[in-house]
Amino acid sequence: MRRRPVPVLVAVVIGFGAGLSLAGCSDASDLGATTSGTPSGAPGLDGQITVLAAASLTESFTTIGEQFEEANPGVTVTFSFAASSTLAAQIADGAPADVFASASAATMDDVVAAGAAASPVVFATNSMEIVVPPANPGRVADLDDLSDPAVTTALCQPQVPCGATAAKVFTSAAITVTPVTLEPDVKSVLSKVQLGEVDAGVVYVTDVVAAGEKVTGIEIPDDVNASTSYQVASLARSEHADVAAAFVDFVLSSDAADVLSTLGFQKP
Amino acid sequence: MPSTLSPQERARRATTGGGSRSAPLPLLLPALVGILFLVVPLAGLAIRAPWGDAWTILHGSAAGEALRLSLWTSTTATAISLAVGVPMAWVLARTEFPGLRVVRALVTLPLVLPPVVGGVALLLAFGRTGFVGQLLDQWFGITLPFTSAAVVIAQTFVAMPFLVVTVEGALRSADRGLDEAAAALGASRMTVFRRVTMPLIGPSLVAGAVLCWARALGEFGATITFAGSFPGRTQTLPIAVYYALETEPDAAILLSLVLLLVSVAVLVALRDRWLRGGVAA
Image (cartoon, rainbow over all chains, first blue to last red; front, side, top):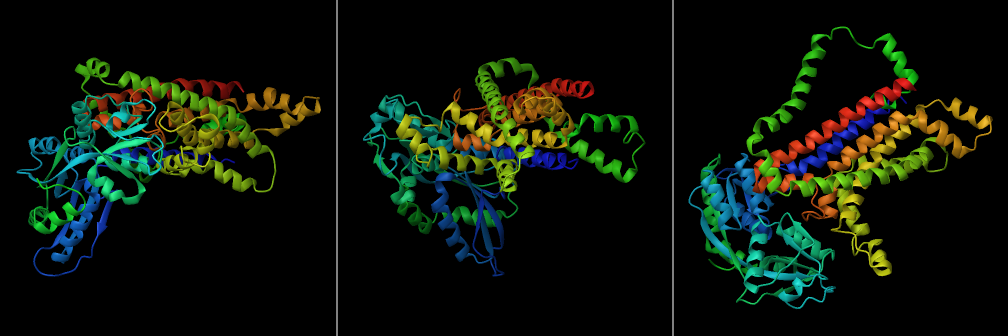
């Protein structure tokens, strides 16, 4: 029995470590990152780049990354998708990354102001949509229903672009929405809706497209809807500046624009 | 971890003197590196803390709200863990039944399970569409996710095994001769439990409760997954720290210091108590 304390200690370390790892991950090559494509020794561009991209770009950038790798066989693109504000904080803390794609101008401005990136370019815009589980348990029909306290709503944190843009929508519609939870990024809002744990969420139009049958979208009228602009820039700390610049160019290409518009993004 | 040693064992070790001689260099150096590694990050917090503005920042941010929520939820989680976990530890330590080892492994699983996985599991069981949560909703109109109750549940799920493992270890190593003597003198099993067993394992019980409370206070992954995050209702101190790091880094540092100080204060206060308890027993 004298050996008992050892597993306890080990468990304490593991337990606390696991608890803190979420709060502490500033490394872009963390678990959240996804790698795609195969490296090979073709001529031209060569190397591995890490792209930090807004969570709402998960589907589009994964496809764009694959196309970029096909066009440049020597290149591997690794993505880390999270809230733009989270990624901006990681960049400020020195995360090793080459390109940043933000879901809002304000977040990109912070990164540029800190000297971590220069001359960002707008490549798409996106507006908001109400999303409900297919069964629509809260019987949500329009924006006004979200102000009903009986309707449980999930929103993004206010500093996350999707939260900031949703707040603009509520302001122009002159309604007050009290969410039950403020989620770390737009995909978390979407998953809470998909799981049926909330009656409604406010996400990007593109997230509704990406989720397909698993959710139902309810359009927000144009006169009250708000949009956010997506910006991309290569990062000053990049060790593969040529590849990073080529990726930024590729995001601005017509091939990438096709991918983006198929998924519901609007042209800037 | 002296807490799971029997008082006799502790007394023996104290008198024979385990390791008061100077340590050999091959052990001393890595030990120093280890100590530095654990202490340096804490020093980092203290060095970067905006001491001058501490009061205004803590007053202006949601710190007080988050601290209050964290304190009452983790204390409630510890109380529940004591009420359920101590009997559980007794059953695991003192009874025999088929599948005992499997049960023991299952109830201690949250110790090594990533907390986020625990949160997903809780959501799928007690969520509105979960197989238990669905019934709670239909029968009683109770939905747990995104409530303070969900915070307590997440904390209890993650922290209770710390108490159970500690208390179970103590029960196994405690002298059962005293229990048997009391029983032979006519005490009922419940009386033996209350008057003999519990006082014997008192120090370990306190240690387990403190571990459990500290773990509940620091809970992040299961909480944010199962309970979400809303200021005053489900946004506990660790979650507040996580978000503040994006918006107000200074507030995040101060909130972290608050958590650190609370943890240190509790450990110091209770360490003293259970050491004295051990000597008295």
